[in-house]
Amino acid sequence: MNFPWFPLCLNFLLLGATVFICDRINASQREARWNGALMFVGFCLLAMILDLLLTSIFASVPDMDRMNYVTLASRSAWAERAIAYLIPCVVGVFLAMRFRQRQHRRDDPVRIKTSDYTHSELSV
Image 1 (tube, one colour):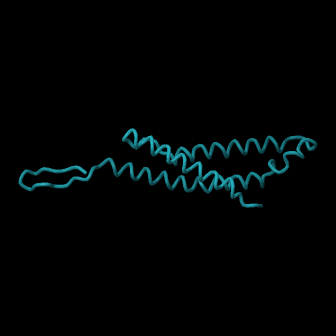
Image 2: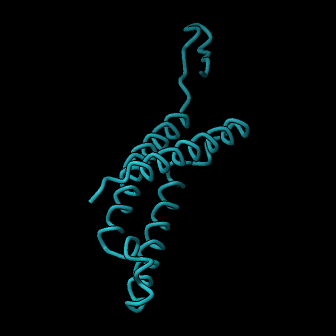
Image 3: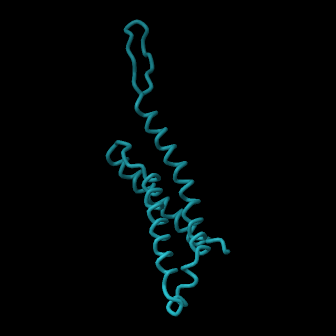
């Protein structure tokens, strides 16, 4: 079993692009609405399911036609690809949780007392 360095790097690149694009959209709308890491995890899980489905289809091809797909149709080949999906998914879940924490912190603004006499406050 070879470690899938290229798909792993490609998935991390896609994770970074998704987070960056959603961050730019959130900045333009001045509202933290789009969670790019969570979107990436959803797409990644969908890709793993579709990859397993296609692997099962190619594995069921008759032996004569299967010679072209031997490297793609085995369960070990799918396991290699699943590792390349799962590692960025774990990082994506961690980033999604951090996004949620930052979103909840922004809900309650920090209030600074400016004057004891007038009881005024400044929101930051």
